[in-house]
Amino acid sequence: MNYRHAFHAGNFADVIKHIVLVRILTHLQEKPAPFRVIDSHAGAGLYDLTGDEATRSGEWTTGIARALQARFSEASTPLVAPYLDIVRSFNAPRELKAYPGSPLIARALMRPQDSMVCCEVEPTARKKLISALRRDEQARVVDIDGWIGLPAYVPPKERRGVVLIDPPYEDKNEFARMAAVFEQVYAKWATGIYMLWYPAKSRRATDELAQHVAATAAASATPGKCLRLEFSVAPQTADGPLTSTGLLIVNPPWKLATELKEILPQLEKPLGLGGAGRFRLETAKP
Image 1 (tube, rainbow, N blue to C red):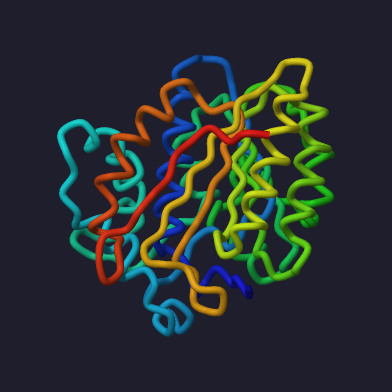
Image 2: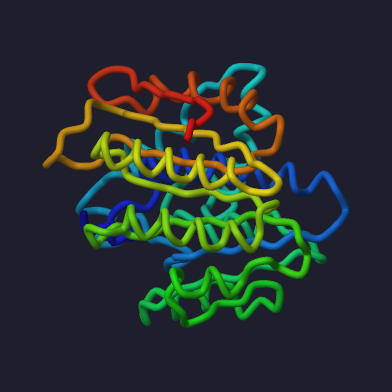
């Protein structure tokens, strides 16, 4: 697939991914010790939903636009509110014209003692990200391929934090590369939290990735748990647009699974296309 994010910003996959990211960062905030965010494929930072790309795809209209209008249960409202409030902060009241990418969402939850490293090699996206972060001293943008940069940036000196691995999946070997690089970085930092995003188009490819990641975590000297989340807004077809998204979360905060069991059912109807969406949430097995 060709995943130029300007076409897909704010779609259902972003909503799921960023809700999880916000929940993880919220848990990291519970301790005063500093944490670091490492984003392997950071993107442009802020996306114009009125621009040509977003207008052409219109994916945000069935993603973040619906999430902002959805009614959540009493239990799930405080869990999704921080994410929705961050999105609203980039827009005028009652308007939705911009969507923040992972770096700006993470930056909104960083404290003075926290830091972030963003890898981005595409020149236009990197320039936009630097501008969006306003040369923030706590957030460094580096001109390096995330696959090469990740092993160099772990473990961070803080020894706490989250690694977001979110490649564009433009190459057919991206799943294999994800598995290999995760194995490399996990060997260096087995106590970090990892979020691995993938398009859930091929059941064989996604199952193999989940099994490999779970096996890598389990084989560590300090065995880690791998949570697998998949969310579908409609049945996925091999040649059709993306309708199923996946996340592997390694070393998830202990409350995360319980929180997601509250949140995800609330998103099935708002995000579903032609009917309610569906999700699966389970511990991945080697």
